[in-house]
Image 1: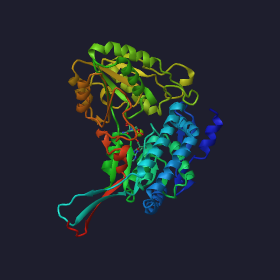
Image 2: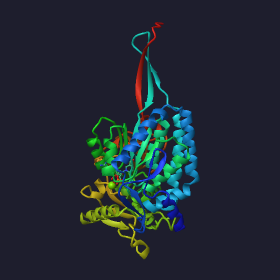
Image 3: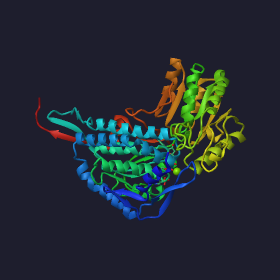
Image 4: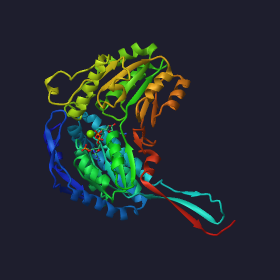
Amino acid sequence: MEKSTLTELIKKLDSFLYIDHQFRKGLGVRLPVKNPATGEVIGHIAAATPEEVNAAVSAAHVAFQTWSKVLPKVRASVLHRLGDLITADASNMAILMTAEQGKPINEAKGEILKLAEACHFYAEEATRVHGEIIPNDQSGFQSLVVREPIGVVAAITPWNYPAELVGWKLCASLASGCTIVIKPAELTPFTALAIAQKCQEAGIPAGVVNVVTGKGSQVGQALVEHPQVDKVAFTGSSAVGLQIQQSCPQVKRLSLELGGNCPLIVTAHADIDAAVQGATRRSFRNCGQICIAINRIYVHRSVYQEFISKFSQSADALTVANGLDNPNADLGAMASAEALTKTQQHLEDAMSKGARLVAGGSVPEGDQYKRGYFFRPTIVMDCDHSMKVMIEETFGPLVGIAAYDDLDEAIGYANDTPYGLAAYCYSKDLAEIHSVSSKLEYGNVAINNVDAGIMNAPYGGRKQSGIGYEHGREGLLEYFNFKHVRLYHGVRE
Ligand code: NAP
Ligand code: MG
């Protein structure tokens, strides 16, 4: 990749906010954005001032009056156009994402293309939102339930999927007739600003989409507290999700997609090769920085050694590299020093409590890894629930494994954390599959595969993993209020 390409792309976004259809240079303090593979500063964001936050919310509030009345078919055509523009520029958008987030460029491009797919999916859904007619207990009456867009949405998003996690909220807002102010993660602001460029090109009317950058504790919190924000759509950690819920000064709609600590159960009747393939993908993709990443694995004792030896070989075969130089790498750099340190701490904690290292465990060797946040895919075995790796979200390329004897024991362990986002199981036995899928206290359960979320099924967490849904019909309905219109027409037969 040409360095000049990145410089050109950043130049158009550096220190800009997107408010009321205009890219304007922010007036607040400049914060650096770094490439996590090299430590180089690639550009800056301007921390939005309270006046700029107000301007964005106010633009969205005004735009809602007209956007909410635009015909669904017209909103759908705008979304299709946006999807096409994103597809056409996917390569450049991927360069930006890799430079700020670290994931290999082909993976980044895959994410951009999935965002484009989301635009087309929500375009179609936009035209299929309908109400209901409810039976009454007196004749002469009819009850209509109509769906009306909520209003101004504040989208607050993390850095692990900088395009999709912004995009799902953006698409649902556009489809429903809501307007939106996006506050992307401080680590990955340029992908969000690049999406705003596409919104501008797509001719989305002024004020319907706005992006303000800056620190979550200031700019994010200002949006949460803003009286003209009608809904907060948040994806991020459970701690910040709870903080948002507790600090919201008005009653407003909240959807919280929060942290996870996802288990995989491999039973005595599993296809071990398939389980190894799934475990490798879902433990280490995006360096394990996925809310639905496999954090911990419970394997039946009869297949424990076989699974571990195959899994360690599979992990050792993965390549770690600078994602801009090596588009096909399996793992790029982790997104930040904080993320790398937490992974190392969880590893040390497990080792000090008796776990055994079976793969990885260190920074890869070579000068090219010295300035970035790289770590080998790492597996520890003989783990138990005194270890952080089994009960806290590591959010790094580290997974712990424990043996079990009885399936109910494994299910008990799987449920034994405050999280309830996604869980996985490999088994070819129908009774086991039924038992596991009904007893797991999770919003998403994937059996014999590790892709727990698809666009047209509801995706959400239980317990400390959140409230509300994204995706599917249920996800779109989160952007609507229901209104019951009870009509007396007096016709009695
Ligand atoms: P985070 O620290 O919770 O931050 C998420 C967003 O909230 C960022 O934009 C952040 O801004 C902002 N923020 C921080 N404090 C805030 C406050 N007081 N008020 C309003 N906004 C505030 O999460 P992260 O470290 O970026 O992301 C990793 C976490 O996200 C993991 O726990 C992961 O499991 C979770 N996640 C969940 C899902 C899901 O679908 N359930 C998907 C992906 C990730 P700054 O960038 O300035 O901190
Ligand atoms: Mg954070």
